[in-house]
Length: 212
Image 1 (cartoon, rainbow, N blue to C red):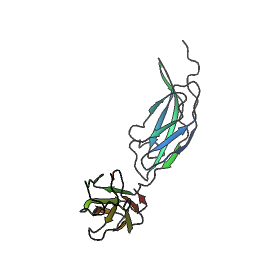
Image 2 (image 1 turned 120 degrees about the vertical axis):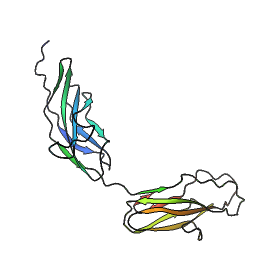
Image 3 (image 1 turned 90 degrees about the vertical axis):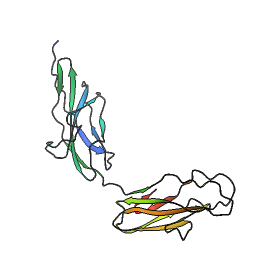
Image 4 (image 1 turned 120 degrees about the horizontal axis):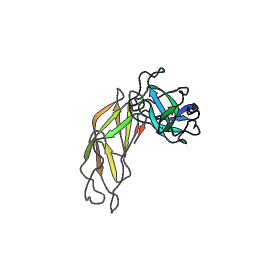
C-alpha cells in the first residue's frame, strides 16, 4: 500500500470556553480523514513549560473538537494551548503542524464557607419548649470584602441561631477580618412550634460574596 499525502491539514484553534479556577475547555476545528488530535497545554507561549498530562496528549476521534482540561491547573494563572491533527496508521502516526495558540487566564479562587459538621440531631422536643443549644464551627476563606459580616439564618420559626450562645433569634451575625474565618463557634436551638418531624432543614449563611 502507498500512502498519498498522509500529512493532515492543520486544525484551527479557537478560544477557550467554560473557564473556572481549575479547568477550561480547549476548542478547535475538525479535520477530515484524521483519527484524532494532539493537544499541548503550557504556562508559556513558547511551550517550554508543559502542564503535566497535556504534553502531546492524544485526543481520539476525527469529530472531536474540544477537550476539558481539568488537571494540574492553578487559579489566576495564564495558560496556552495548541493542537495538531493526527492520523494513525499501521506504519505509524502522521501529524500536522501546530495550530495557532490560544491563551486564557483561569479564574481567581472562589470565596468559601465551610462548617465542621453537616448535620445536627436534636431528638424529641415538646412543642413550644426550647432545647439546649448545639454548636459547630464556621470557617471561611477568600471572603470579599476583606472585612465584613456573615449572616447566619435559621430555616424557620422552629429554630433559632446565635453567634455567642447567649442571644438567639432568626439570624445571627459573624464578623470577620482578613478575608478569613477560623473555627468560629455558632449555635442552634430547636423550639418546635408544631408537632411532627422536622428533618432535612438547612441553616444558611450569606455574605462575604458567598451564599451556602
